[in-house]
Amino acid sequence: MGRGVMLMSGGIDSPVALYYLLRQGHEAVAVHMDNRPFTDDSPLEKVLDHLTILRERFRQPIPLYVVPHGSTQVTLMRSTDRHVGCILCRRFMWRSAERIAVRENATFLITGEALGQVASQTLSNMRSATQAVELPIVRPLVGLDKQEIEAVAKEIGTYAISTRPGVCCQAVPDRPATRSRLLSILEEEARVDADAILEDCVRRAIVM
Amino acid sequence: MTRADPRPGAPVAVRYRTLRLCSNGGGYEAVPERRASLDLRGVRQRLEGAGLSVIDARVMLIVQLPPEVTISQGGRFLVKTRDPERAAEAFDRLAGLLGLARAPTTPPGD
Image (cartoon, rainbow over all chains, first blue to last red; front, side, top):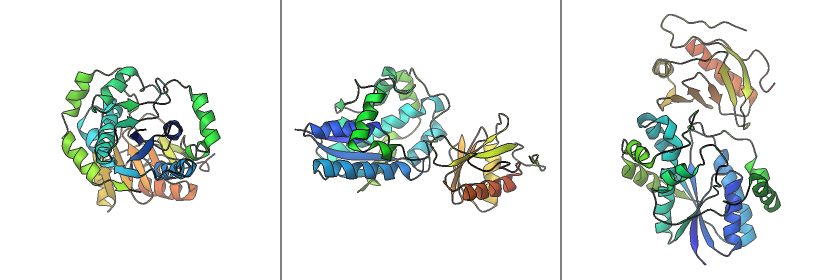
């Protein structure tokens, strides 16, 4: 069985995606991109509680890397087109996860994304975001609809945690791009020093 | 409802009706009665002049009172606390510094 790095947001989907991977016997390392001050403490608290449930259920340590991401958001908001902010943000998330995968001897990345669940979750946006990394990406929930995901979340005990009150990400633009062109995304990203940002964030990550 | 008090040189002249729980229930938000466009540079200068710490993300400011308050270019204030009294206190403090109409006129959370 393999070892993968799971991006965990504190939402409904990511613990369910991780549950499916663990159920198949894979090992996992969790990564949470800490969006404060664009959120509050609640996403991190939720991820910690999700992991408590999954660690106990599968008797796996599942280390959690908390990567500071707020300063990246500030840089992106100051220097790039707001409409593609979510795609650029996700490119940094993927890159951070990939760096941690290399450190942790993991060979793939995992996400709770499902196609078309939100306006910005389109194929072209996914393509633009994931072009930033080389490791394969596993999406265990891609064929499920929201009701099915919620049913599993309730069954494994993560739903009540995910739906606790919290502040939504304030960095999300009013009208996020839904059909991105990779070339224009790369041009926008070239306005910032991506390598330096990434290096700094991963260096400041803490393991819990 | 109190009218705005746009003092000479004030960066904003916007009226607010209520302070209400935000959609995910993690904080309280004050939204302008009408669409607004804040001069965030002026807002930042004024708040920093009052000794507050402000993160400038170009299209929004994050003021670290505490509690933390996000001020968007469109005039929305999001106070990151689930305590309605603390939220009202934080908004009133910023509103006073910026010469905004005072909120809330109805109890938070209604």
